[in-house]
Amino acid sequence: LNPWHHRRPFWYLGAALPFYSAALVLLLPPLDRVRSARLVLDEVRRTVAPASEGGMIDFRAQFGFHYGGRMDSARPGDREALERLARRLEGSRPFWVLLRRKHLPSLEAALDPGSGVRVVWSRGPGPEDYVAVANRAAAGKR
Image (tube, rainbow, N blue to C red; front, side, top):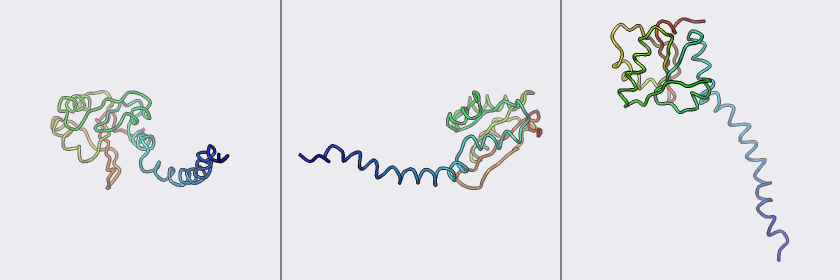
């Protein structure tokens, strides 16, 4: 029997580990700047009033995690959920919604004309073209 036969998987792992470590160190920081939920939410929070509650359309739960609490959410085709977000935006409590620009017409269709909801932050153009809309109470800067 070959004494190296049982050690071969460990040798492969040991040889691949420096390569994967270098790839993570070099690739993850640039990707984090573009795709990080935490960074996106930090940018939005700098544009809305403190203690504003938030919502999202078509985003994963990681955004709620980085928000630090539960965010009201909706899927783009869920008319009832879009109307719920629209009612919260039209309310008097500070509220904002993060969404992809392509979903903005669906949300606007659920809002009453003259509601005072406006875009307060955007990132794009590109595949990650995001916008945040806020009501009057949340739209003020800190």
